[in-house]
Image (cartoon, rainbow, N blue to C red; front, side, top):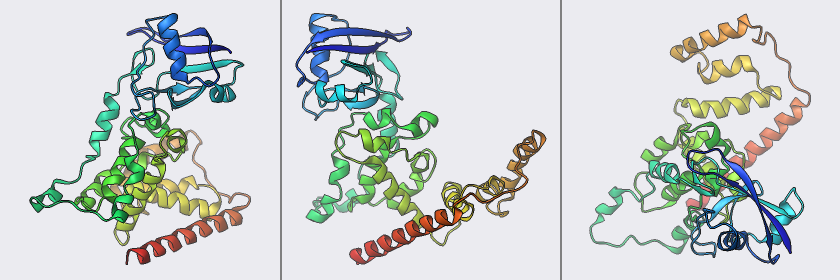
Length: 333
């Protein structure tokens, strides 16, 4: 079949440009087969990474038809179904990473963010001498999902949280972080939860679901991030909530009460901690004054249409979460 392969190319210190190659290739061929054919028979300067060709190493991660994927995993026929242009597949380098050349990106920020969460069993657990770190099949099964990660960079590429917040460590790192929390051999749970409890950690996640959608190994990074949030919130019960947790709690509470966010109360309750944080309240004064001057401070608030339905939906979800948490406690007992 005749196929157009449109590639976003870039040389070092140069602007990116699009180049289209025309191929005669089988519908069952993979996108990696297309790239190989282009490099071997049309343009030997085309740069991309590859290795196992069998969805194991993660080397050939790139953006195919607008989303991150593995070139060795996706066939021409399936990609044409996704394409917005007839008989055309578009290919670009992974997002959120510096481009080295063509489809090759610099993975150093990706690895650095992984190292930031210290994804290794704590040294305290190694103080047991020469004994083995034995686990039951059930304990080991908890680690399988996160252990399937092949570090391909797909989730990192398409992460909206990383795009807007460079300090966010990314979904790959937090999926590995939860693996440590779920590992019964690790003895640094409290320290880890404190480290992950920030906008560079779990609260930097925008819950866009992109990481779950593009992950080729079904690691479900968003699910792991949500589990970490749950452990942080459980640990914080009865203690003054830090600002990232208040942000989530106040947001849900205001939407529950009004159907949407009452901006007048949001800053006071999150930053000012309901008038208990004097320094936080003072920090709001310059912004509040500028808003008043420009006529952007809302003087009144009206509940949205359907507020009762919104409140009922939120209460139903909260009730379900409590029920599931209670069942989880009973299963651990």
